[in-house]
Length: 256
Image 1 (tube, one colour):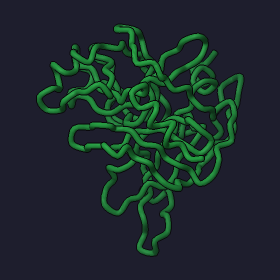
Image 2 (cartoon, helix red, strand yellow; image 1 turned 120 degrees about the vertical axis):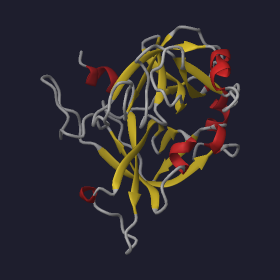
Image 3 (tube, rainbow, N blue to C red; image 1 turned 90 degrees about the vertical axis):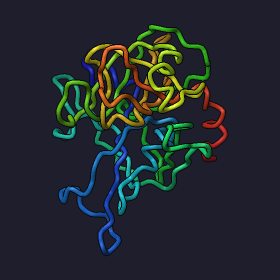
Image 4 (cartoon, one colour; image 1 turned 60 degrees about the vertical axis):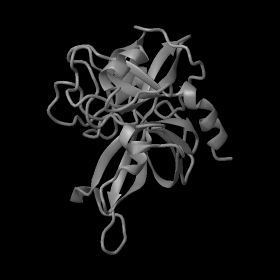
């Protein structure tokens, strides 16, 4: 089974796009270079994508959150195919609104979670399916979690135009408190994972899901929030928004 099958049958990663507004207030064309893939996200309902608040809000002046692209694997190929399978056509759906946690604090990444509400429903398929959300607060230290998204991994100099996957160990909050505590206070709404030499998600992975594979299915336990500037340093994990801590907020704020 290829990586394409492994990821897309159980887990769909979304590209969140910022689109520059022209003087005529129309969306500019992708070929102009004004569209950039800002973040990642995951499907949790037919019109809802879960991501990080810093992805939903932190955009350059003159940009607005415009579109999510669903079911993409490799932007250099259309359609995405391997020797056994060609994926369904990607879906580009406009954003209707964004729901950001009311307690979000940008400087310290507190409550770094948001939901993107789409104007149209996602058509579920083998490459576009919702992820289960973790509602159990307990974690198992050193259990391997899977991170999938768009961006650069440790050791890569340039962005890669396809989904990438990395397995990282879950570590204690105390570990992150020792490393980030003075500059960015760590709290119970966060998870820590990683800390292995040369293995970490760097720029472009914001909003990506951290998942565990249990009982034959993927469950999302975290959302990429922030990490060290020295990405992939031994003993320095990254910080994720803890899905279980925000499960009630997510359920209570889903659109009807």
